[in-house]
Image (cartoon, rainbow, N blue to C red; front, top):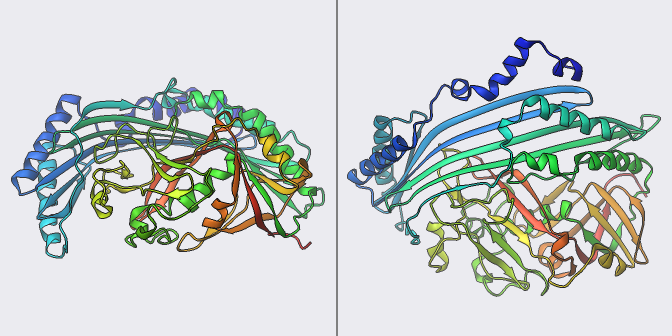
Length: 521
């Protein structure tokens, strides 16, 4: 559908599009019970679980909504709006877990599911070698909401489509830019949690992500190059789409894509590296955040690139990075995708160091895992991507702390005689123990004699994880700190996807190996 046709569609068609936004219960065929009913339903389910023999029980009643709008050049490609609603009951009986879920949020169904979960737990206990021990947590009665100014679901789809089409127009102004795709993805999780320990917590969580990618084609059609936007998903409302300089980024992206067509290819070899936040977040994600998940370290999780070399004998001993490297897990980080008031076990969100002054000092944990390493409390890292999935350990926001000494990106560049600065994330790979890594990128700038001298292409860097982080000798200060992240971090079987952010400021690494990924030198 062309822009003019979309924006000027008939009254009937426009009403059909607005239907997605104004008749939510009819769309999914359910009605969310009022608050008083929800509280009674959770109490009845917990009572049923206890009566059936559970030593502990919790219940999550969750309502999810997602909206996706996409465009290409001057066309609206799609607009979709989906919802789901249901509950999951988790119990401990005879020292083992049991779980049951349903889409029918009624008293009879919730009581039935609670009893079923207990029966499953008792069956599991036959094979349980050691009873589950939960780290204690206070009982909370609380509400929490992502601080938003504009509810993204209240913004008409037409307005979102027009924003995306304007992004496409800006990107295609560059001579040689031929294609541009753009999209907005927004999500809402409305969650009610209650436990047999006395917690009753309501949370309303929002996330939004405008994105685009522009492609340039050479005059003879023999080559093409792309550049994605640097805009990252965040835990905010639609105000983010209005505040972020999308049009400026789109215009520069078109120019960058065109410039890449004629940029010289990289010469393989060792040189210094400066990573900007639009790239660094992915390196943190793969080489630190996944590597310090306790279930991977103990070999209980091996899906999505394996286990981890960071085994428990390294705790408090491994020199993971240089002295200036401190990396923290933080579920309270402003605008983080993993930012909440409480995790899916009712543990209050907090911040904790994973690497402190270069030394590995802690894992990401949930209530069950804390005892495995002798800790007395959970770090609040439990998350389930659906009411029908059991919570498991997932990343908090994992971020590299900025320097406390005022430092600009220009200061990092000035200290490089021969190096490359990378913006934007591209291809990547990492081995099954998180030891060997390789990363590409979006845009590569050559540095000679302390100055940026031009653009390169076809570059990727390789390193061993610990060697890489120990080579870090410069980090910019707080004013250059930015969040990157992923909506869909995969883990486990059946797969669960979790949103997570990684913050950082530009950082410098010495003597890193670069390879050529494209044309022959």
